[in-house]
Amino acid sequence: MQKIALVTDSASDITKELKERYNVRVLPFRIIYKDREYSDGVDITPKYVYDTLETEAPTSSLPAMKDIENMYEELKSEGYTHVIIVTLSSGLSGVHNAISLASENHPEIKSFVYDSKAISYAEALPIVEAAKMIEKGMSFEEIVKEIPRVTEKTELFFVVGTLEYLKRGGRIGRVSGTIAELLNIKPIISVDKNGVYYTYDKVRGRKQSINRMLEIAKDKLSNKKYDIHIIHGEAEDESKNVAEQLKGLENVNSVTFHGYLSPVSGVHSGPGLIGVIFYEVE
Image (tube, rainbow, N blue to C red):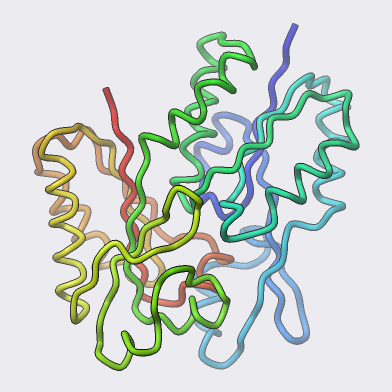
């Protein structure tokens, strides 16, 4: 009989409630300051990251190999036969490759290491949907076939307060930075099929960028039904306002306000992020 475990990394922004409900294990990224190191979401908060960004410049690193190895040892001791692991986009991090390599050391557990090609709750959705499939009694093989379809139905858009932190962390992908900053151009950023950031659209000024996000939402909702998830990085009031404006729109199945994105994502995005994740529902 199959016993299937679920694992993701801390960049997925999976909520505490869902983590506990579905027994999802979360591998923490590491946040490294000049004289100290933290485990993402374990002993550091998003608020702490934002409060120290101007005076300190932390970097991030992959989950420790010992954490990955310990995770596999725990699964083995608990009698798991299979594991589904959903990771941050390989276009943004080496975590997928690291876990894939580690999984080869544990042939006793059949592993499916899935590159979400996404970040934040767009990364969490395949894990959440896999959990629902497990509850329905679907097999490992059936779930593995369905997970890519979850990604196909998911889109992510976000704006940031400044492009400085994306540039500093080398995560800017195909988003042009310096000239845009000088002209106060605010790109609407999305993630392409390869899991790399790109400019979906650009407008001038913060207010217009938020209005453009709402226009994108209205356009998408004109012919399809969606669950919408809102995440923010030190932009709570603006994000809540976006959530409220989306709730009344036609074809909105649900709007969920998740609060802060993970500390490790905050290191690279800086303050002012508003993220909107769309998940197409039948």
